[in-house]
Length: 108
Image 1 (cartoon, rainbow, N blue to C red):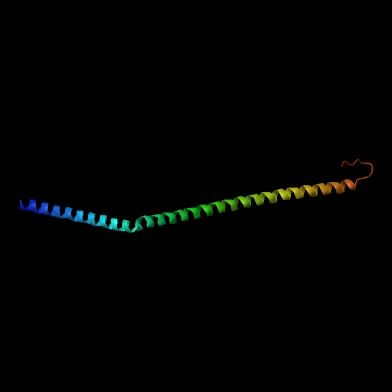
Image 2 (image 1 turned 45 degrees about the horizontal axis):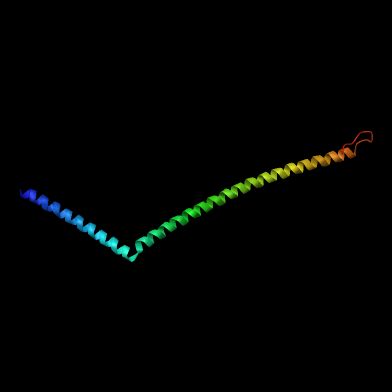
């Protein structure tokens, strides 16, 4: 019987401790909320996270643009090279047609 009473009193003690801890935590939370720090600090933290995410998105967009620009520059250079080759081929045709004997027909 005494053992049972000790268990009950120990259990009551634990319950009281838990209740006190919960009350203290609740009071601390209320005090923090009363000063307005909780909402402010949470909002500041959220803004910091958003700034970080926006910064990453910006870097990704810049990287994509640079990659696309490099690809377009390579394409432009290839087109310019083909154009230059065609101009050279046309110049060679003109030069060879001007050096033809007079009996042959020239197309211009």
